[in-house]
Structure formats: structure tokens, C-alpha cells
Amino acid sequence: MNEVYVSINGKEKVVQFINGNKVLVEGKEFQFDLSKDNEYHYFLRLDKKTFDITKVAKDKNKIAILTKGNYFECIVRSKLEINAETILAHSEKSRHKEDVVSPMPGMVLKIQKKENEEIVIGESVLILEAMKMENEVTSPFSGLLKKIYVQENTPVEKGSKLFRIE
Image 1 (spheres, rainbow, N blue to C red):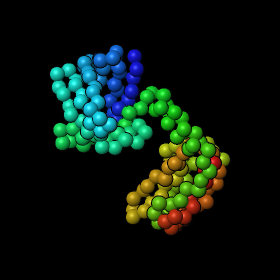
Image 2 (image 1 turned 180 degrees about the vertical axis):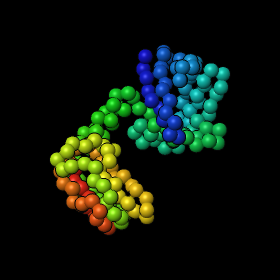
Image 3 (image 1 turned 90 degrees about the horizontal axis):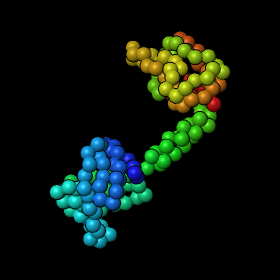
Image 4 (image 1 turned 120 degrees about the horizontal axis):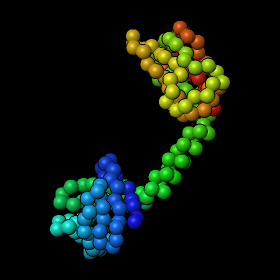
């Protein structure tokens, strides 16, 4: 059984092709028939409903369509493509060397990690007070907290280096 992941306007659905004319969408089985009028015009029959579809744009796995006056942006990917994207995103993040800068002016209240400590993506490194609010500054990726440039109870400007992750 072939399986694809279809994202339509940001909502993902799993579509399983059972055979040449049956699909399973979120546990519901449909008979389907797709016929091509030309490169841009298709007819899709799902059970007893027919859809007149116009392909507006196509770019690799992305397709934009019009049907019944509604516009839809669709992304179609296999499980293998999703896994590859996840692995690539993780491996790119894990090779970063980056200085993290202050997103706003404020006062460093508390440093929660130590230099040469392993940290994971999203983990809080320090607390920055700005406009009487405490803001967590988190790690943008996993790695080694190589250097901390600031000290507790010291002011920082927007864009000041806070720490380095490698």
C-alpha cells in the first residue's frame, strides 16, 4: 500500500492508495478516478462527488489548485521525504557554531548553564529582564555551550553577544 502525506493549506492528511481506484483518507475509504483534460485541467471523482480542478502552479512537491472557486496550496510528500527533511534539518543544526545575541536591551538576571556544558535545542541558557518582564533566552540548536560573554546583574544592549554554542 502506497502512502503519501498531503498538506492542504497547512493541514496534513495521510492518503493511502489501496489499489488503482481506492484510497484511504484518515480511515475513510473512497473510490476515486482522476482524469486529465489537459496539462492544467483535471476531473476528480471521489465516490459520487466530482471536482473540476485547475492547476494554477507546480513546483517540485508543491501544487496550487482551484476548485469550485476555492484556492488550495498542497504539498505532497512520502514518508521517506519527511524523514530525510527531519534528518537534514537536525544534522544542519548540529554542525552550527554560533554566537547568540540579545534580542532586546535588558539586564541579565540569571545564567542557568555553565561553559563547556552540553545543551539541547530549546533549553534555557539565561534569563534576561526587559521592561520588568523576565525572558528566557534559549538555545537555537543542540551543542556545547562554549563561551558565556555576559555576567549576572549586568546590562546588555540589543544585539550584544550573550553566549556561543558549538
